[in-house]
Length: 129
Image (cartoon, rainbow, N blue to C red; front, top):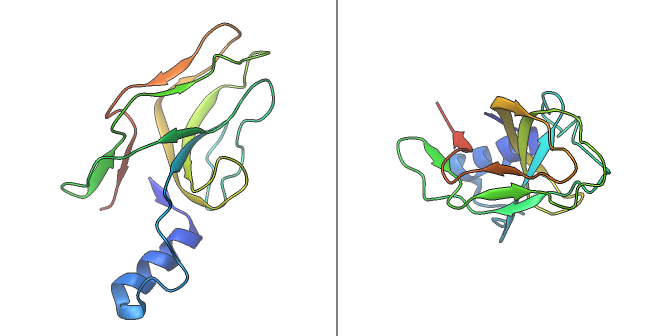
């Protein structure tokens, strides 16, 4: 799991006494899928063919990590097979917005016409070491 530079700056400002300068915790977070490592910017996000980010909630953190608190389901509005997703990301908006963090999927997924891609409760985790 890697935080974006944007989120790293916000966390450091908060922890080091700058408060939440110009940062409000997003009311809703959105999971994205990527065909390669999104890096610090959210690169390689899937697009087209019915793809859209999906709203998600995370449970309260414990022992340095937090997982999704309900299933996240991509599809079923798939109009053509999607590229294989190897990574996921977290954004603060359903389109555009700020990329917050990303990580590798344990098992890459290809979502095809007529199918959905489901990440079960607890199966996407954000963690800090």
